[in-house]
Image (cartoon, rainbow, N blue to C red; front, top):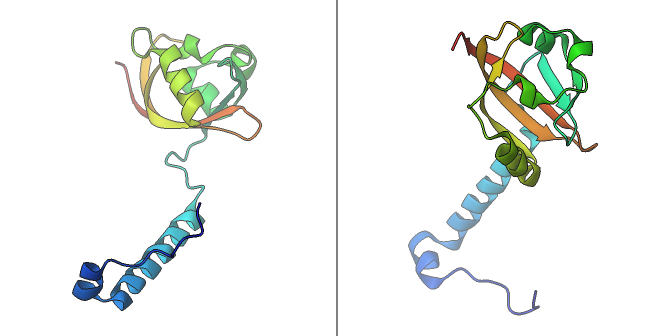
Length: 145
């Protein structure tokens, strides 16, 4: 960036509102941004249904709540891809995973299938952790679809 002249407020704005008003607005925005930054990491989904998957979409950790939700024991889920628990014909898993890999964060709705083959709709929030694993918190929305 060049070391040119500092930016000055255009004359029309200085005349209409006054520089003091603009400084007050700027300070207010800075304060609000700091408040918001302090609030994170705030999660949209608070749940005891938690999964952790690797980049190949294989479960490496699952919570007791998630096991209960889908009707399987932890040992049966570890190492399996979450694709196997996604309801058929509901999501383009490859496409969603590529997008997630670029963004590092996603949230939305997902259709899972339980052990009894019941479809359940869940709200999820997933993010890429510093150790490159994908953590997701899941909340049940509805079942029997």
